[in-house]
Image (cartoon, rainbow, N blue to C red; front, side, top):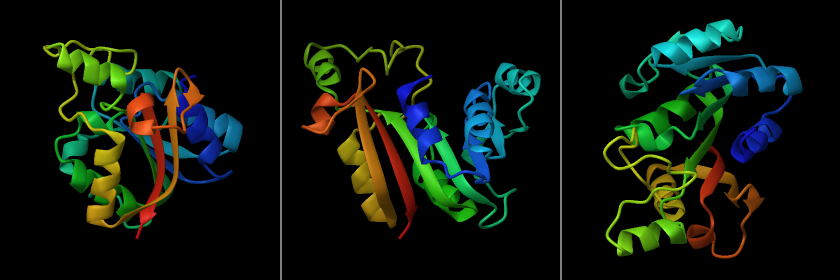
Length: 192
């Protein structure tokens, strides 16, 4: 399991109602049910991923996240997860606000575009490719690359309170110069 997913499983309280946005094949939701007895729903747009969720016995709705989460009432979930999906969303601010409208807490993970290897590749004239940013510029699903500093600034600007942060590189925590040395960030957030 990816290190950010292990952290997410650890952060989700036992029995919490969970909504996983961009849930892929549903493996995180399956892990949350097995390890935390946390029932949940996944939201996914890709046909193949939706079919994989169904095959994995995961509750899934085929919805485009760009349209928001209007089909969910305020406070419907204890925890809303956006795992390595933030960078694929056009309307980032709207989705972050919607996450905290429908859930008491949000957990967000994303690849850090500020990692030193990304900076070096840009300085050498290339768009970054790495383990956490595995696509070439012409085939990437990513529409927004952000850094740890960018994400934290956005949270302050729109009134999101960061409760906890874990920055990782090669599946190990990074505490020294996280925006430079960390390749993946995971946040627990609430409305201010």
